[in-house]
Structures are given as structure tokens and as C-alpha cells.
Picture 1 (cartoon, chains in turn brown, yellow):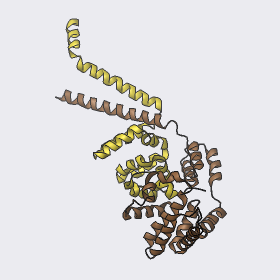
Picture 2 (cartoon, chains in turn purple, yellow):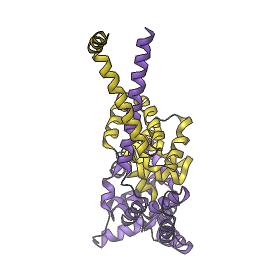
Picture 3 (cartoon, one colour):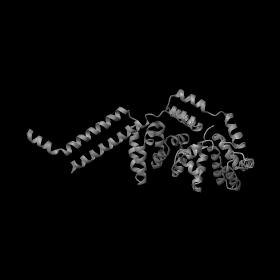
Picture 4 (cartoon, chains in turn orange, yellow):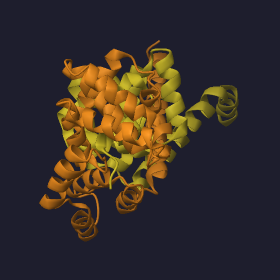
Length: 205
Length: 145
């Protein structure tokens, strides 16, 4: 009985060791082609400068790549103070144009104090009246909703996020087809999940 | 011009149930959390969610030390489908210890993993061979005697 028990344990242990080492070999093989520098350059070419900068700093902090190349990329991707202020105040808060995280933050902040909604509603109304091809119905609708819901900061914030995402996504339509963005922009997200997205916005900004 | 972080984060995963996990990851690990989501996507979030709270920081630390190992796990279609099937039947926790051990073993040099793999395979095949050929051995023993 003891012999059978010992044999079963030996078989199970061997199968476990083979599975673990096989999986480890598979992991090695699957990740062999990963190059941090190439990945950062890919993000940069996809207009994901903020993501690329995060990746550069992540790889730098954890010494995961060639330090010289990483330093060069960091210098290339970093925002200067003037660039940040211009993006936040001029592009985002004042003009309501979203180019990056800073201008997005500025645009959302201006929406939270109604100014942004009034500005976008006025701009879109003018475009509608003059038959401008740049007229965007969703932005006009969300601005109106934002003004109507200005008393409720969370709902207004979510509308503002949706509106500014629409502004951005129209420049990169492929983004709208990816992940949760597709559901979010088509309005198929429940109020509870919208709250979570708003929470995510506060953490990623 | 750059795609804002929230937008790219939302386009990195498909499962709406991962919103809480993504928020939790970014709240606790900020930049590393962002890098984790961009690189590992849905599968990485499933792995993070299925890991108990005690070991979540260890998982992120493992990602910091060797992002390639976790990338290997989450980018493989075979593993993704296995995770999905186990998740569907509520058996994902069974897969987590195996993944953890594989992650630890993947820190070893590749030649050593090959030695372990081949050594155990050969030993197992010998055991199976012995198990299913008892009569031949007995006959030989009798003949030798």
C-alpha cells in the first residue's frame, strides 16, 4: 500500500515538474521577441506619447533596458514646463481642443465649471448654422447635456470625459474600435460603470 | 500630440468587469500599473484579479523584475484560452499556483530549464516503461536465475 502511495506521489510530482518547466520554456519562447526600445518607439509612432513616457520611466526605474537608449528616449518624450502650461491652459481650458493628457485635463476642468460646455455649444452651433463640415453632433449634444447636468458634478464629469474623448477619437478613428472605448462611445455603459470610468480618469490624469 | 492615458487605458482591455481591477492597479502602483495594463491587457488583469490580495504586490514586483516572463504568459494564445476556459468554470484559482511556479522557474537560465524538463521527462518515461512491462522483467529475472 505504501509502495503504491509513494509511486503515485512520484508520478504526480514528475508531471507537475514537467508542466512547470514546460510552461517556463514556453514563456521564454513567447517573450523572446520583446524589445522595450522597439515597444516604446511603436507607442510613439501611434501618437501615444504619454504611454511611451510611462514605459520609458518604468523600464528606467527597473533597469530593464539599455540605459543610454532609454535616456535618449526620455529626453525626446518629456514635456517641458511651457509645453504643459500651454497644453493645459490654452489648448485645453481655453480652446477646448484635446491633443494630449494635459489638454484633456484642461478641457474637462473647464467643462466642470460650465464654461467649457458653453464654449463648445457656441462653437458647434456656429458650425451648424454656417454648414461647416467640421460640425459634430455628439459634441453639441453632450455640451447641452453637460449644461443641463451641471449641478451634478459626477454625471457632468462623465459627460465631459465622453465629450472630450469624442473630440479626440475623431482624429484617430481606430481608437474607437478598441476595448471598452467602443462600448463607452456607443453609450452602452451602465451608470455604475460610467462612475468607474470617471474614477479611472481621476487616477490616470 | 498624444492619446490621453485614460483613452489608451480604456482601449487596452475589453472586459468591462476589469474596470475595478484597472483602477485598483493604478491606485496602488501608478506608473507600473499603467505599464502593466498597456503591456498585458485583459489577460494580465485576469491574472491580477485571480491572485489573492496578499500576493498582488508580489505579482507586480515580479512584473517589475522580469516583464518578459509575464508577457510570455499573457501574450500566448494557448494560455489565454486555457485561462478563459478555467475562468468560465470557476477553476481559475487552480491555474494560479502553476503560473506562479512557472514564473519562478522562468528566472532560471534557459539551458537549466531544458535540463529539468528533459531529465524529468526521461525519468517519467522510464517509470511508465517499467510499470507496463513487469512481465518481461520477471521473465528475465527468472532466466538469469
